[in-house]
Image 1 (tube, rainbow, N blue to C red):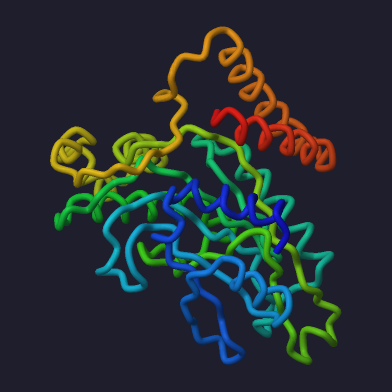
Image 2 (image 1 turned 120 degrees about the vertical axis):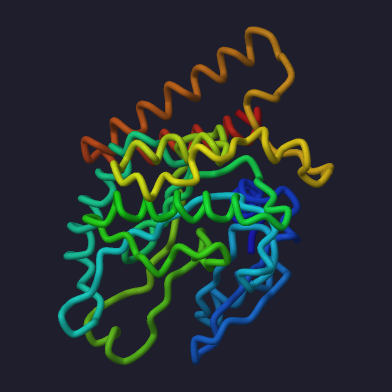
Length: 300
């Protein structure tokens, strides 16, 4: 893996966990069994040269649900679906379906932080200020409630109800989506390069995301945990950590230059969304490259 790609991969993973070694990385063998792999370079070598699909678990902990110690993100898998025989649609039909899905994402009132373009849809992430579970049930219940609300809201756009678990594995970007069996080759279904688009840099707190998503539904049952907790109720007891998470509000003052760069980045994000809405994907990609450079240099 070359230097530029390695830097992009690390930048993506650091959005979830600054200590990348604390994330669980995996690959699928030919029989689709999952295996962990700690080395990023080795993982991407498997993807590029041995056609292995590669994944990660965005929340902090292990591979089992009872091993998850902290929530780093809420997420959805928006899938364009399959035909009546359970097979993937053609590339052309998928592009039409994904166009509708992407419009729903960018018009959603709760802006996601990252959207990863996969062959059959999108993985959408709302990054959280890392929220430690601390052995309680309240925080997992709130997180699960948010997941269900998001999934219900995006149900018309293919939200996958099976991809909601705290220990969910999701596809790594800057990797190839592989389908090498005879059926898919005969249908002309090709490998697909998965690429992320960055929208919002500021993280949500779990309480904020709970409040925002509670407005998506009038179902009182889905909001039963909302009034029983707050971010402050657990923050004083959370484990001490030396990890530094990028948050624009916590950055030191850098004078007028920093403020100008921050405002410029915000403007570019707005422009990026307008370009996508108007089907000007090429120009939107160019704007996104500039946003990524500013994010990398100034931690906006």
